[in-house]
Length: 209
Image (cartoon, rainbow, N blue to C red; front, side, top):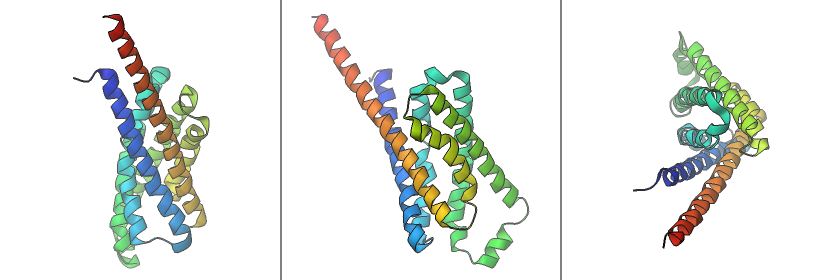
């Protein structure tokens, strides 16, 4: 049976892979839409991206949990809840509303729908700001993407509700780059820890002979 440390390393690598894919599915459509506008293909990719980001958050939190304490646990939990809400809204917007005519969209976004969508974005924004703060304070991951997570992602949460523009495309590219950068740092850390555990295990086995 794999040891807890090996399982943790595998979780980190899985989270890193999913996070990198999520970042690419955000950045590439954002770059394309800067020239073509929103398309069915880019909308599909953007709809799937939040789901792939979910495994990244626990992996990031697990790597720095010892340095962030209870505040880190609460920030991580709020960020997960916000990502779930925001991801659901993004999925509906990109795969359902995208294919509706404008009058149908206006008729759909009535009653509590808009306040609920705004609330989802707000929870996601606050969660990103708090979890990004833990990334900055822990100093486990590179400072540039850590600050980017704390500052850029909350802005991104609300700008995505506005009409497509160069600003929204640039933010998509920036957010995607932040996720890929953090995922790469997590993967390097996981591989380094795995190699260290392997060397320690081999040394222990040799000493026991």
